[in-house]
Image (cartoon, rainbow, N blue to C red; front, side, top):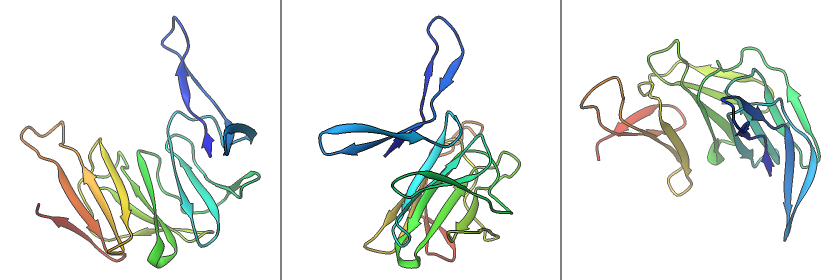
Length: 173
């Protein structure tokens, strides 16, 4: 599934965002329907227990789910703040973890999506960085978080963190 995206308008600094959704069907791409709101950046992950694709826009509020046919906006309060976000499905816990770089917080925030409600986890976490990514390690049932160097702190280095489902730990590699 491919949805959204953006391109620069020719001879302009303006960016045009798309809201269409495409599904790959073997050898071809098929236009499925209009998707979530137009946004330049969003993150998605598959909820395997519920067979849904979950999407969070970094610039627009809301959580969206794709059931294979159509998108549906899911209302939830509270909801993660807007900002760079990564979604990772924790297979061993059958839930979605959102890692959010809230501009108002010095650390990354951790949020859990259970298919109907977002819960903010008040656990100590990694420092907020401009560049970060996360993956699920299914052999060890861990989320691995990679942070790039902090551009505002000369001499800072990349960091790797691990989420056990209950706590974040910085790894010394």
